[in-house]
Length: 86
Image (cartoon, rainbow, N blue to C red; front, side):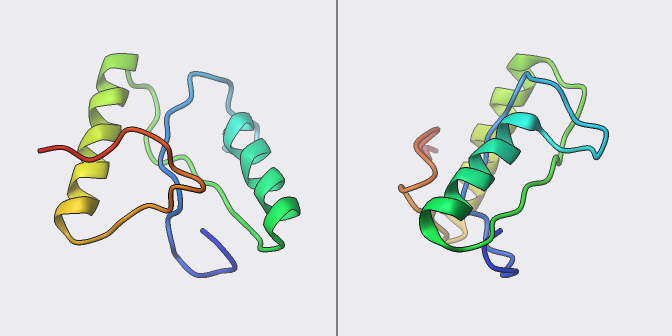
């Protein structure tokens, strides 16, 4: 999310550790970096836990596809892959 607007700018999976606050260390590092670089406040949240890597990759691709079918896009400044396909 950016600046309190519920605008998803990136979807991703991480096999890394989750902090006591329930946040992904990797995602938090990215959000902090973007906040410093672009001057907006970015937030993170974990939406799925305890998935195999294969299931997580499939979920991520499905989410991107659903957004694209609904006419939405992800800003390429943040979201590199997966690209939508169907």
